Image (cartoon, rainbow, N blue to C red):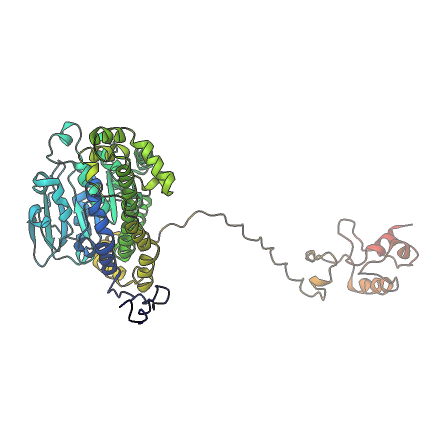
Length: 540
């Protein structure tokens, strides 16, 4: 009480209170950590600002637990279904192969204990399948979607998505009860690798296929181009076809980097063509198989990359919606104000970019954002929650790096790589070359020229090659023009002339007195070592 003389209890400020140390969360794997981070700190913000209606649908636990996915796209009869059969080593339920447009639906080829097919509606509501987001396309698409399950070693590690061939003309837009490009974009956002298949006989990229490729924007790092059925043409035509394909891709995929193209013939028949062509196809097909083997190994890193990309988009979306909400009037004229805001949406994007220093690449497409926002009431969106934005930035800056540090072995262990390699042994046997691959052409210096060995010294002569001052081999032996007795006498006289190197100067030999040489013949060379003596004898 106030007058009782009692002192009030001490008040402890926050600075005096002991701080609790944050408890480190323990996760079983990278996927488990990403799952919990998204569920607790990312998805509430996405739901508050309706991120799923502007971008891809909200993610579930099955999206993080799903196996790596390989998406195959291409025009009809380019070999997509044959490519899957080539990888599996057998047919799969629901597969139809022919020169006409045979595959009329999306088929998810997955692992199962027995061969069976599952309708698309059942797959979309299955809790352990990563296809819950396909419900947004309605029954028009789900009736053209099915799952094919079979027991194959490769499907323990990846899921293959077979797609219907891209048609041309009005058949692509009117003949289908769903948006083909939007479905492709949904699968592309969840795929680890996207294979664009082309036929060596059909390089034309139709307008519909161009729209499907443009729907893959933002996933350029996943795209691999495959030039199939390349063994059906000769080497000269193949060179021209490759150049035409690169020219066509440059018109559609506008990236500064050159797109990687794998050349081969992906089916179970022997390769045709010359020896040079077969060696080229085998090396290219081995490179593609090596790329596919690395898909499970890089799955954890890819999931982290996709979540980081999604968080950055969600953060930019929250800033945009919060800015537009702030510009709306409090009471009257909301509809007119919203229409005016959407009409000048580019200016407001620029204001958000300058105010919060957001990268331009994190902003959505202007036309798409305006079209979706026209169906919503801006007054019903919440104001910008700065604490939620700070929590998202903390996830990017601290939580995800800490999670990757807990599991540094994920993405580097070669167990999954070897397991996929063992599942593709039948394919590797098909592309294993019987002859060594040709070596690359490179400059090699010419070998040093070896001098021929000098001939041995003449028999019966004590003179060696090393005694010749010029280093040359001695001349061939010739018969002496004097008798051995006369040669012995001349040698004695020649020795008195103090020869140097086996020779005497002309001045010394000029004063020497030599006996007559009756048997000297002009047609033969003088005796070796007697050049000076011959000169002296000939001089009168």
